[in-house]
Length: 623
Image (cartoon, rainbow, N blue to C red; front, top):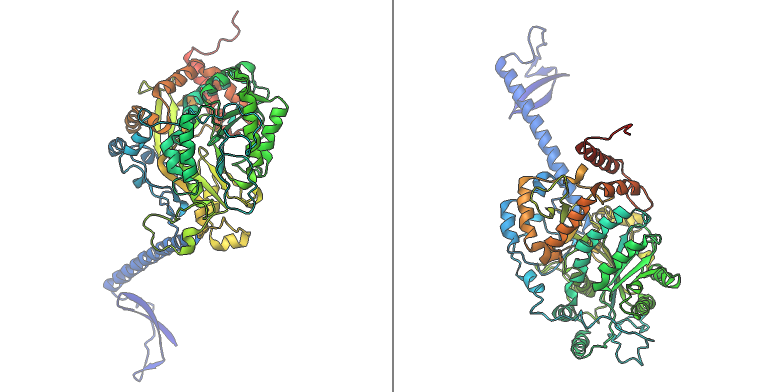
């Protein structure tokens, strides 16, 4: 049998030719007679080969796209839409077009945050006005309870005998023991300051300025301190009437005792310089009623290591600090002799009530900030998704347009949830080497969600959930491990999830408020991410500069409580002590619990070199 090649319908086909066809033998193929006897046939053959190659490449591409979407769909039970923006930040992405400037002038908060399964893309981040943001920060027209709810003069706290102590009725759960704690949620915000770096005074003072200008005001101005926000928060819960009554009593009584809506716990190096500690206490005076500073290098809560408030380790570490005289604030403030003992009672109540309250643990570095709406939104979502349905009347849906959720999904509650911010701002403070706008520094919007950033990163525990039941990951791995993992891989890993279906909803990406976090990128940073030598930002260009100037004109203070004047003051202070701060930062590299990157050391050393070159170099052998 002999094989011959023919063309048919622009496709190559090989056919078998029997020895005899129509009674005649097939002619032998001579050397002089080529397979394609004409130039026309040869040209057609080349065209066909080219077409086949193109079809093959297109088929491969389509298969890859299909497979990618199929895997993403499985990861979220066919309801997960992986954001189309999981890519590296580029200069084009970081830059803010002129349209965003106009949109920002009319910024408005959306109605809710979303689970990772329906995280919005950047195009929806800045699409509406900021009327709500204006209303939330109008301190002239909205009365607050921050003046009243400040836990004054707690003696021996016994719920049945202390009429001034307010505690909402216990939740409906099997483990409730009615321990004294005012709220159904225990919420801690943990900040680390100069841990394992207590002797680096220049670095400490620069970081202290950042804490004062950035971190402090964002917590001091949280909207949860406003009466209307608190009433709105508990509107759809069994505690609605109790909270309303509490607000009325607070207006008529100056001795009302109510636990803080959240606790700000700052841990510092036990060997930190006493003068630095004194300056820190002075800065924290306005927030002394919900803030505690202890000397400890032990960290719990959000992170890779196990241990937190629920299992008692975090609370016990604070109680030990009281026992060992390592509580530096508010006891050292000296303005209220009972305040230190009052805070001890608050911590003990929170420690003892940890098993029968929802627990939220939030991370916030000393040079970062969260939106003034952030705490309110976290607690709203916790009441909605972690509280028993008998106590919370919220109806849970994936999004406002989802009419396909089953009744089981509508009342489904989670055992635990992670929250992390989506869009955030990064601030590169002005320096002696870089100050093109002659202001506090460059602010850049990062609207794409690449991974969970640390500011505002939160874990929530429902009542009955133990510490060991919650997975702990590096912040860069939370999104792929919780939201992107396929159901098959979860089963293989023995990952039972948080109780939500799909399991990707165990991670919520906070897009309400839309711009949720504010990060400092200065020469005090350990990781030196998005910052080059001499403090020059990695994303500086003309469009960013115009965008940044617009943001400093009121928006940043509106969203984060950060004033441009305070930010500029911090930048100028760091500039006046620039090289000494950089040298301290070099010494602090690779200390326990801090970044250890060769690239960071190189940038810091290059900054010192540039300074010495500007001063005319180093004199050698001078008399």
